[in-house]
Amino acid sequence: MTIALLFGTLFVCLFIGVPIAFALGVSALTAIYFGTNLPLSIITQKAFTSLDSFPLLAIPFFMLAGILMGKGGVSRRLLALASALVGWMTGGLSMVTIVACMFFAAISGSGPATVAAIGSFMIPAMIARKYDGGFASAVAASAGSIGVIIPPSIPFVLYGVIGGVSVGSMFLAGIIPGILIGVGLLITAYLISRKRGYKPEPGEASTFEFKDVVKTFWEAKWALLIPVIILGGIYGGIFSPTEAAVVAVVYAIIIGKFVYKELSWEGLYESFRQAIVINATTMIIIGLSVSFAYFMTIEQIPGEISDYLTQLSTNPLVILMAINLLLLVVGMFIDTISALVVLTPILLPIVVAVGVDPIHFGVILVANLAIGFITPPLGVNLFVASSVGGIRFERIAVSVLPFLFTMIICLLIITFIPSLSMWLPNLYE
Image (cartoon, rainbow, N blue to C red; front, side):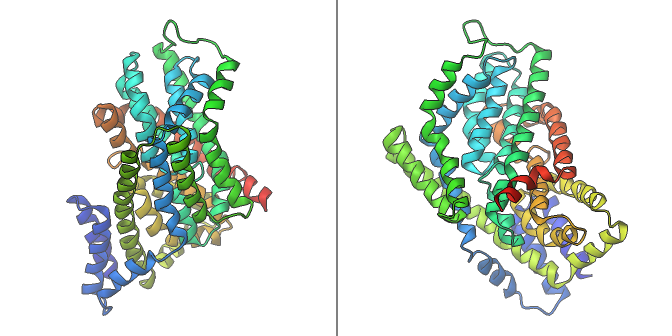
């Protein structure tokens, strides 16, 4: 009865359009009121105490750093470097978009932020060069998903906190899978561009020019140092991931204001304002998601699900495939942060019981939810790309299908070849 109340209320709330954070809170509140003798105040208590976490401070600071980078001239210089590297190829602008998103992913840690920062430049540029608008927006939306896999990654921080896994190890584990997905998207964009005849315009470079790469690399050197400082500081034992996020903010202000001189005082104020608004939303989601997950734990729902899955099979690959299917469906309807908070306590004990490393599973989990960024009906990146590109959501949803298929193939490779995720963490240890 209690489980039926919990999930029934959740699905009804989602169906009528209640925001996910409040849907989780209301469903937990309903189940507690009608199905248990627990005090209702436990919802607010768990929501509040869950936010009293030093590692969680990394989330707003990485958000702020990403926004400051976008307003401080970093995006434009990364685009110039990406253009020198791949802009001469067939479908050059689409390739530039993907590579630039990979660079920006190493700064922002957020999928939607990456789409907004790079897509606002590249989608109009591609449309102006006669690229199909749906294709242009789909490229930016799918490439933006890499933002949560290549470190630093806000979902990796959250998974590390919830699952008791080293955030630094999660950052290392995401590097190779993130590059793999990026390469897969590049190949897909190239094949589509070749079929449609998207070639460099007359007067543009049609061959690789090493001097252009050197020039743009030098101009972008301060931007490219950001991931080196963040990851080097963490793995060198100089600071924690949370402290690294603060260092990233300070560094972003310095290079944006005093080196590139493109970050105005108004831009600095707007960056802080945006970060505050986004973080407020994120913290509400995290707090109420934790309350929902806590109630499931005391009702022993994770244990029942674990028993059911382990009765189906003890083969870790079979369990992971079943979880992949579950997560792909969940990602279509629930945002990444809520899904992480709710599902990590349920699924992590299951995979650990069958011998899957928690770090490897964290990459699988986040990669699944990254696919959710471009999967309707939620598809946050699709909405962001639609907004910055002025293209209808439905048109982008159709155009993104080849990239969605590619990301699923990459997900299967990541699932079946654990060394892709584990090689760097094991090497560091």
